[in-house]
Length: 386
Image 1 (cartoon, rainbow, N blue to C red):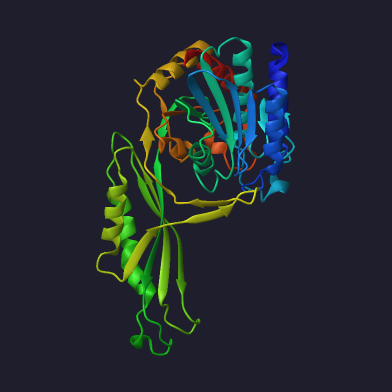
Image 2 (cartoon, helix red, strand yellow):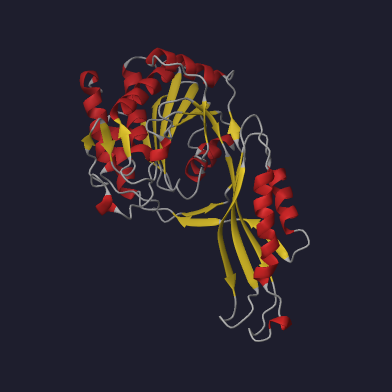
């Protein structure tokens, strides 16, 4: 059983241990085995590593089920010499846990694992099942890790908490995302006789103007506004002495609740109207550390769970039991998370996690210790309340 007297020490020690393991996307094997071993040592009822290499732990076997979802992968560190503390040291200083993944999102992994055990030991699991998942490849493929568990029938919880950083505020939803490749086509010709060709870059020029116009014309919905960004441009020619016969741009479209996939499709069709062009949603292919293939299409609608939903109400009660500040207004993430894999299966989600989201992916990433402990208490209380 968890030593309640020293739970802060045990929780923080495990969070440090997680940060000390480098676990960039596709290389999560070591951390997966570390997490699974910790769950087993804390007497989870069931612990598995699935075919993609994600970890799933279960405590309890009641009819009502709640999932705490985190991802175990992080982005790379390319500037370690410039960090205040080494990025994989797990240093505790100035009231924070420092290191890559401390915010995004290894502190939440530790807090959710220990909260499930503490809730069990406190007798909060009557007629309840608590799952803790630690999925792979979130940084490149939002939702695919948890989607694989759901499609494989490993779990189907009633509700889910996405433990991404929120500075310990309740998050009701997040923006949707579409990553789109748009190409124009031309005809190659020698650079000395451009009139014999059709320059695909020139064909793209007006489309680029339409991208900016479309972004500027997006209307706010309930106070939130989507965005459209051209993030990459390239062209193809047989040589530097030739007219390009293909030009490609990459578009990042972020949506808010009320904007549909049909709306995105209509925008793209208007973008290429009258041009020798086509567009498609990107297809991202990756290989998990287990060797299993992952195919991801980044096209997700925004989602939001209402304040009247039973899950939100349980969260509000748990928040009021743990913290003194007002839980309202609820927060809303600008970024995408693994929630998309759950929403796809009709599972209501709420977000809550320790750490400032703006610290994610940054140099000197660090998570306040009091927020790690606060998240632990909130998760434990939520298990009692739901």
